[in-house]
Length: 282
Image (cartoon, rainbow, N blue to C red):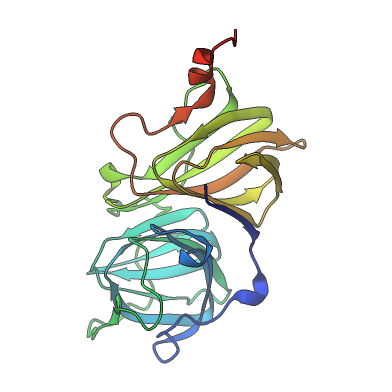
């Protein structure tokens, strides 16, 4: 089974293909793409310098962004709003959007794209378009404030989607981008594993990515153990078995994506449920 584990490399940030003449101060580093074996995901981290911008473009894929640091203004369709730390927004397929940073400080965010973007030199799937609508002096609304902004939000832990059971303890996963939110091609969520927590071996009929935000855990994939810390990332392909075990004294927290979206039922195979049928095993 295919999988990949790596670490965010600050030296790998670069202006994406096709953006050099249509942006200022914008760079991205790819974490998950076809180069490591993925067929469904384009996952990366973006940064935008103070006074940076990205001109209006459309993608032939869906995109979700989650702000880690700083502040950006997003023009999406006929809306303009601000994103601050732990805010997120969905950019549906074919919707015109642009970014700017007028905060005076650099900004950084996570992005997920599905279907997976095409590599440079193949069929073009990002297009810059004319946009006559001027930016306001200051975006009038923030996702973190009182304004109701569709397909955008501020991360707040709510009811977890995974309940404790055999082989699972101390785990909470909070999904915030899904079909009900408007996403059609992927899920995005935050997860945390409390001290002493475990998540037993399991697999899925979809791909998953994990970017560690804080704390530490041992992630076991196909029999190999990896010590994940902040800035480390992992990808598991379809059917790759994986498990987690917390280490350290503070919760292990991460951001996670899945693509395609889960089937309505039987999206997870928990191995401990099936091992009871192994002949001779009590």
